[in-house]
Image (cartoon, rainbow, N blue to C red; front, side, top):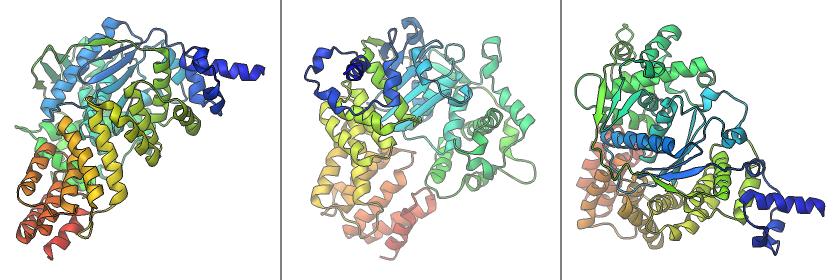
Amino acid sequence: MRYVALFVLLVSRLWGEAAAENADGEWARSVVQLSPFHVRAASGEFRFWGKYQTKNFTVYSDASGGTVEDVALEMERLAAAFEVMFRHHPVALPRIVVVLPIASSDWRRLDASPGKEWLSAGAVCNVKPITMVTISSDWQRDRGPLRASVVRALMARADWAGPFWFTMGVGEVWSKVAVGRGSVVFRPDNNANMDLAHPERWAETLNEQGWLPWREFGYVTNASNEFIEEAKVRRFLAQAAVLCHWLFWSGEGDHLDRVSRCRNQVVHGIAPTDQVLGELGVGRKNGSDPVHTHVNRLSARKVEFEEQSARFAVESVSVTAREMRELFVLAQLLSQRPGDTEAALEVFRVRAPRVPELRVLLAAAYLADGRRLEGYRALLEILPELKGRPEAATVAEAAAELRFARLLPEVTLGSELSAEDAAQLQGWCESALQIEPSLTTANRILAWTWALGPRPPMGELLGKFEMLRTNVGLRAGSAEIAAAEAVARLRAGDREGARQIAVRLRQTSEAPYFVPKLLAALEKQ
């Protein structure tokens, strides 16, 4: 009996609720065991934590309110500059969840695990339908890792992330900025305050360690040998940063078109990184590699944005110890920390989080662990409760993506959707796009539901494919929407229109892996 009492006491403390709430003992009896994550969470008081919200971020921190507000303002300015630079102006995307523990935080004590601090300075987890950032570096002393992680999270949320070198390189570039009112300046003057973050250190690193061959560079991931030692990581980040700086800013003009073509080809597996870069002159054998030359020509660049007071407001929101403990466990699950995942999820099956954002994070945790069916069910369960919130858009989009992948793992000319399936997918995608028109996956799946539904699209509907491509812009997905339009036109009897799209797409070299086969079949019609 003594052990039973201790167990119930631990469960009660874990969620910070009165034992009377579970007087019947049903919940306590239904929990088989606590996971290591929950045991650690139960030992934390989380007494000094606060929760703050801005337009783009929900920040949890145990720093002083003034410090958090200052950091939140900087993050919003980074988001404003990001929107200008990437030409991505969302209407209502879900806030990115950011955890900022101070150096002496109980979170850091509970989260401590073997490994190098430099390797885990900022963890970005993007599992649709939500993005989360956990900062484990001393962000109060050096905001560089925080800036890099925030920008990588913005890239993930906007569907601009990947390949690995691109995401890491862009983040590294943004870590070396001066953030001011109405502007972000890349490569600020080398003064005492910015000395540690000055980009000249990229050149020093590459001169000392040498450049990775571009073929090897393109295949580096966070699990590669080139990313497990501090010196190697610094070399990779320096090379990735110089490459991204060159892609965006070499010469005159705006090079986002070039950046997107390069990035999309690698993302879709059209060609490896070294081949894509080779078409731009990178990796020349005669010693005139433009990226090697660029490392000594890193000129200052400024991105300006409109400083809107409403956008930069910071609101303090109440937070309970239960919410913090649930957040801690979810962070462990989403970052794939070693532990008993099944036991942790079992606790959440019995008692789901109350806070809507955390319930969305729980659905993402199922998906991150490969539990697609449970994740799908969790998405459908939370969706009705999110009405009017930005999360409703990405939850509906994620549900549509899972359903579509199950129905049609690969699209062919013979693929079809039943009236019921097409209606369900269209409903989710259209409701998502009413909230946030820029969602690439929702635009892409909606295009296929029009193309493969029981009735071939005619007249006005054929003209709406252009609207979907406009929504996606330069990001990966536009070529696939065009392929869906070609299939739709073929089914509607417009063979010539379908053929013209197929020919045009073949010339872009940005379509996903299955599209070339689809286009070859189209051209034979």
